[in-house]
Length: 337
Image (tube, rainbow, N blue to C red; front, top):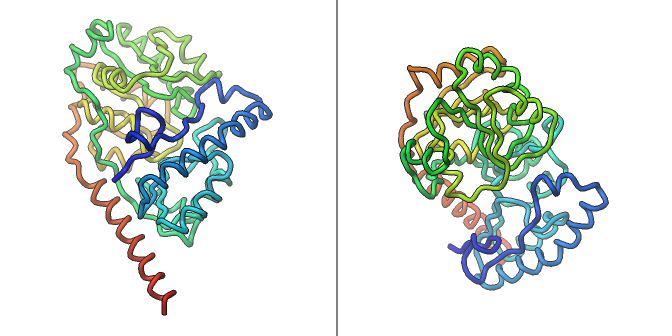
């Protein structure tokens, strides 16, 4: 198996052209963003062609858009020589506004020979837009941590000191329940003045984030984090907060699992939380979140989640590859008759 990815993430010689992303890109106007993606197109297409020519794969498995704007056409071309599998981590857009399924994503899905998702809810959503494509639920059980240290050591390395710490980690965007936390946190701060709510990661400017950061006991640590630092933050917290208004899978949740930090999450993540025993599911209501956070930071704190068992994601993924190759072999036999 070969891994083609941006420099430093994949196998040597299989580097893909990186894409610019983050708050600065989202702040660009439509014309400037279009120009940026247009400049990225040729390097992306060239690097993908070079990588696939170098390893001549039987299956190409993509986890994200690779060639901006024309990914569906690229997938159609790839299918001539290899099976094409997509993992759809988030069927609904994670940007601002209400959740929606983007038309360009649907075009990609319909070009695939199989799609992997991580929950039954995601399977139903993808199938409703791409009914002709087999969609497989393959839950994630991967240990994503690069380093695991005890909570006191993680806090020492981050200079946090003592006291109860609740954490929001990763992209800081409104869909992660920032407005709900802004309503829920004041009750926590009044009851437990020593508690801190740490907001750590790439900060996307929003009214919701500004409102939350203005509250007592809330501290923002903005910026991109290397993997090791992500693990330190996940290990340093008493509880990870995930009051998301959309989504069904979270890599941040699995970071918490890997370092033994419990999670409070919203109903959209319920399937994953219950399957992994990561923590508690809390309804999207401010009072319920105030109470849950106080309970998680109080004397009777939540127990750590059980260790990840592992292996299931790999077995499920290989089973999808096998099915795709079997179907392609069957079509080849029929075509030769």
